[in-house]
Amino acid sequence: MNDCKATTWPPPPEPPRQKELLQDLLFSLDDEQRLLNLAARFQPAEDYPLAPHCYSRCLLLRNPDGREVMVARWDQGAATPIHGHPRYAFVYVLRGRLQNETFQHTDQGLIPGERRICGPGDHIYAAGRKGRFDNAIHRVTALAPSLSLHVYSDDALKGISWD
Ligand SMILES: [Fe+2]
Image (tube, protein in one colour):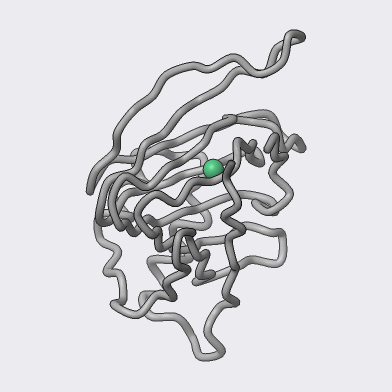
């Protein structure tokens, strides 16, 4: 059983480092290649909070419409629940090794899809249906201590969870 409950840390009170880059990320969600180019230029800090046996979500920038850029720091073995996403979701691995398992939602329930191991520079991108929070259903498991950059449209925490 997965009892990891991720904590979300608010954006820092001072203007974020690399603010222009973060804003460009927020407004490039419909362009996978541009997101990749921007993410490759992102310079992570050294001090993201560690949640033992779990992962922490550290918000870097959030737009009033719910778009957000955040960094997740993963302890080894941490796993998300099986969950869906808003219209756009982009994940870029900065450090470590993340396993991504996809699922299809059918009348018979969830059916496992593919499993992929992502290392530094690898990414996950999904463009789904507007106004829905059950797009791109997946589960992420950290196979090593990891750091990843995430960009979402709408309100990512409304993503539907199946666990
Ligand atoms: Fe996700």
